[in-house]
Length: 236
Image (cartoon, rainbow, N blue to C red; front, side, top):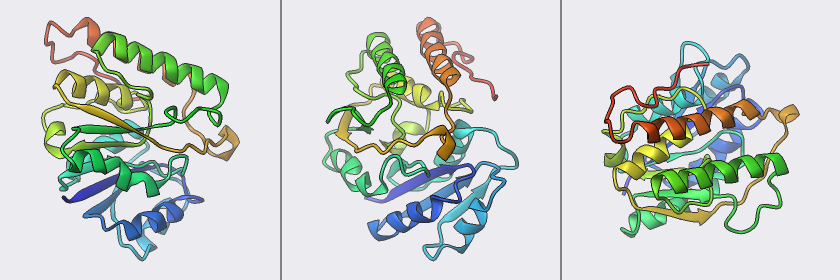
């Protein structure tokens, strides 16, 4: 089973090399780094890395969702994995993330920060994530503990017809909604979490939680209409 890992990245010159170092021994089919218009040395570090990942450059900073969409479209593996470049979630967990798919037990696997306690998750972030996850479970019939996790793996054919549109952090909600609607079987594994502060480069903000909630509600509102415009998230 060939595994493609998509790494969206924006101004992560302090961590990107370590991420690529961690991915190198995993016998992956390909690593695709999507540089989202970084203004630091991120792209140069990717180009110089001995593992020779595929580097895709966005012409400008368009957002995490846009970077993920581009990476997923370019990926050629049987299983597609999303791995952030900030090391909050370790690349060493990717093997475990893929195992339920390889065993035929799941179509999508999420690395949950909450399955084995959430002591490391800041209180406000923890509350926002739990609210969004519970809202997802109620609206879409899922049984997740961490919808917003940045550690996700999927069977590649599942994503082909999802028509993903989000440009920013609401991509996590859109992916989950459309997978749930497609009948995908979800599984979760515990994924240890090492949070960082805004001063260390954390980019998500409180208003992104509001956007994610709006995305969940908007898709639910149009769930029976089949409108092609439902949940279309604009860039910001």
